[in-house]
Length: 521
Ligand code: ME8
Image (cartoon, protein in one colour):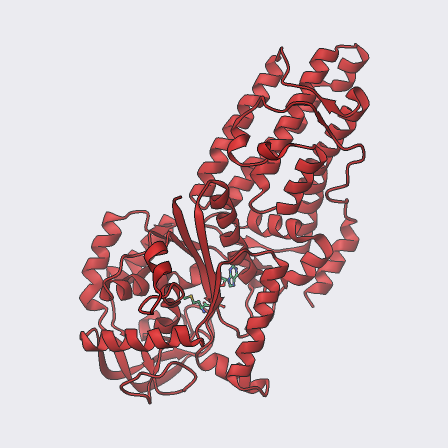
């Protein structure tokens, strides 16, 4: 079985997780479910990045020790992933001994081979981002990443010799043009960081102690990015007694990250791996941000909407549908209550829900709920729909394979619309009146077949809706899997449900917009 290893970032437990964090995780989980449906052995890693000055400060503000704080947050995170039915294989925490021990060793090894050296660091430090910037990187004297105040700081630090590896990384980029996705982000990294010449990276701190101590110089703690990035291999047992997962799954097929952390994943991480003499990940995909009307949603900015409230009121499938559809491959998306309610009513309730209800209603009315077999004679309209839907499967797969999840969803909804249009074109009620029962039977067959395909196409992100559709149509088990979708003539002797359940009840627009606004307060 081919293997596929994918990861989410490990998130900072600095506050409750919002829909941005949920987005990356839902995206990774969708890719996992898709790959599994295509026959891959998939390993999905997520976790938490628990060290650093900011976590220490947040814990202190809550009157907790950092360890108590991160323990609580890890429970919260796992609760959220359970609610979202995230099927992760491992949840790594950087405070676990299995991680700390290996990071100590990695640091030691890099020091011994001369890649890490002691010097002094002076620069502009952004506390919330835990990142130093050079004078020229600042925007109007503020942090170029979050726009907040920065402070001039100086400390004795260990540095990683990035310059030594810069040319090798440039060669790697040139030989692997799809290493960083989307291409626009690769160009940004290349032009803004690699081309002007890489600065060595500061990899230790003495200004706080909530971190992994440098074994040979314990007044230093390992700077949070060297600590954090290595989670992708420590979780697989790198340098530990049992490294069978490392043998099996490394290199990662894809690291999924937000665009805010592409610099760390696209430059520093591959260089650390080169220094450790390990293969580089195959791809790094950086998605955009979910924005709010007033800019980027962030835990530290306080303009946040949380997943739990939306899931509780509208269900998991509607929540995932919205967020995954809203962020198109390389673009940002916007969360607005109006947008959410509209997508729910139009795409889910009107387009998909009605298609299922109309189809089941007609099969019951015209044929006592039964579909016997693939029709003997197919009309031009039938054939057109079949061709359209063959094309949909093809492009959905292509989009999924290249992480264009929103586009894959869009293609699927084009098939939903096309199938609704097919009802209007074939006018089953007229066929019934004119007693053209053979033609009518054929139309019903094609409707069921396309609903079956739609249900399978949405199964990586709308698990419940998919199962409901397949069960209401009483599709047999062997026709529920991805590969079976490519057949078009195998449904036989089925009897659809007499009373279809409403998939998505129509929302009162004003009332629900108000309800969502209240969730944001
Ligand atoms: O950066 N829209 O953790 P973090 C979309 N610990 N995605 C968003 C988002 C938004 N508005 N806000 C956050 C860290 N994200 C480090 C990572 S990895 C070795 C260490 C998502 O908690 C997005 O994936 O700040 C982003 O990259 C990540 O959360 C940042 O999470």
